[in-house]
Amino acid sequence: MSPLDVTPFDRELAIRWDEGNESFIALETLRRFCPCASCAGEQDILGNTYRAPSRPYASNAFTLAGFSRVGGYGVQPVWADGHATGIYTWEYLQRLAAADLKG
Image (cartoon, rainbow, N blue to C red; front, side):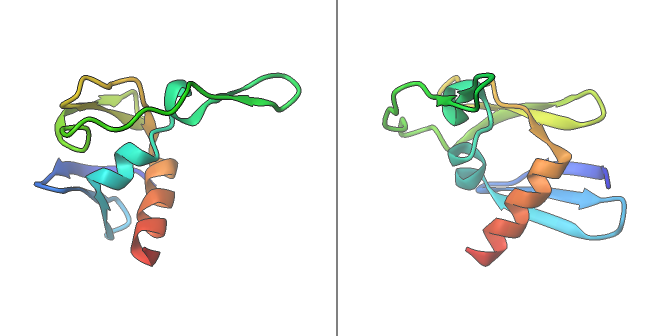
């Protein structure tokens, strides 16, 4: 499954998939589940996960300043607070959308 269109709206990201369905993911959900090493951590060869110390989110942390497609497999958002290291694969976005629906 791959997207035909990815469009940010006021508080969510809308994705129209090639299978005909659509996903809507709250921007706050996207940011809170950022998959980058700083946010989600990194695993070593033994499976230990290392994370940076958690910090409070800035007031504009959930505002999307832009995004770019990364190859044919995902997108990289740029947040208004300057965070821009997370790459979200299409599969990861589908899982986030499914979890966001369960709420």
